[in-house]
Length: 487
Image 1 (cartoon, rainbow, N blue to C red):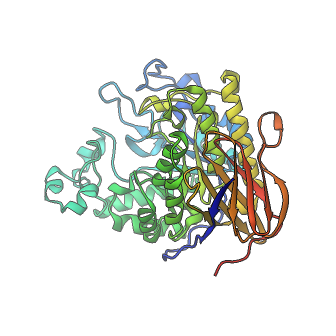
Image 2 (cartoon, helix red, strand yellow; image 1 turned 180 degrees about the vertical axis):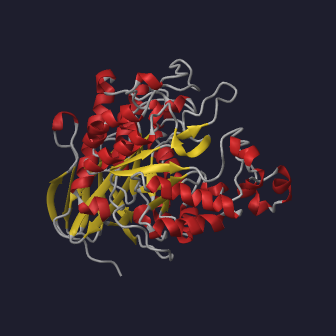
Image 3 (cartoon, rainbow, N blue to C red; image 1 turned 120 degrees about the vertical axis):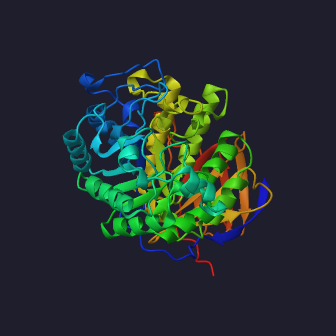
């Protein structure tokens, strides 16, 4: 039996930031790229070619509306859509199906439908008790957009880029050659602020701001303040962001950022079968963020290779994705699921990671098992205030630190103990002097296939914690009495 020296680390936030809009901690966000989700209107399929990954594939707002029950049944509480703006014409044979090449920020691309259909969609989402998040592009227009010739003074030039100080290059130079907006120009700031107001009026509750690394921070701070005053939750995408960057942008005024450092640690530790030390380190660092409960946690997205493709073997990819999704649902923060991850959809780098969504009638038995595990993990999280909203306190040690991660989540008198076993075999662990109250053998709250209780257990005797865990999975246990507060 392995012995661990129990070291308790209370995760608290130390930085200062403006209060974020209420109601978002505890949410579970489901990300959809409408063109690749569901086709509900064949009449707007101009240019559709399912064999070309760079073409339109026919997904639209009607199709998404028809699949909202699927999203709700999974357990998600908020729908995030990538942009639905009218797009520029295809460039070198590649269409703006993804929504990030805007021609007009305040109209819906005909491939997706109409503005009236968008309003109907947000109304239906709200009627189901879900929130709506929409992508907002504030860094650029699409290639060759009419605004470039109509308002040349709105954009940074190559001379601006060449003259910019090194620390300003990201916000002044172009991103992938896209026409780069100069947010310090009053007309541009007014346009972008008006865009947010426009989409709020269509029923949007939250914005995911694209490429905030490339946006002027002065503008971003002012826009975040406007959004906050309107009660709008804001989630920034800063590619590669770690705890320091998350803290910087929460202090600037955004509600949150995506935790790319945690995503990489989960990919390396769980899918890669390596150590959990990287995850432990990121969790400890994230604790210092102003709002750690609002950090967006995720396994993959439309910009990254699919999580399940982190191994060549499909069955292994499915098993480790199910494990990682269980693990994700135990962590503090707001979990975000990219369409298809819930059944371990595979795919390489862009555009292969944007394969068309498949629904249950087309899933394999293995994919159905991953989905069942995901849905169960989400249900367990939603049923537990400790998992959804609680503090997070790590119990860590040296002997088995590579394979074992243990922490306690607590909220208003409810506490659960979470344990991840990264070992390739079933393991029994002991944590000495855990500080926990004695507790008899307790089963996991998760369930395996067929609805059977997960074959995992924990007990506490004389302050020693004992764990029996299946290989490569996460488990969660109700604590009968709250652990003592740490000094």
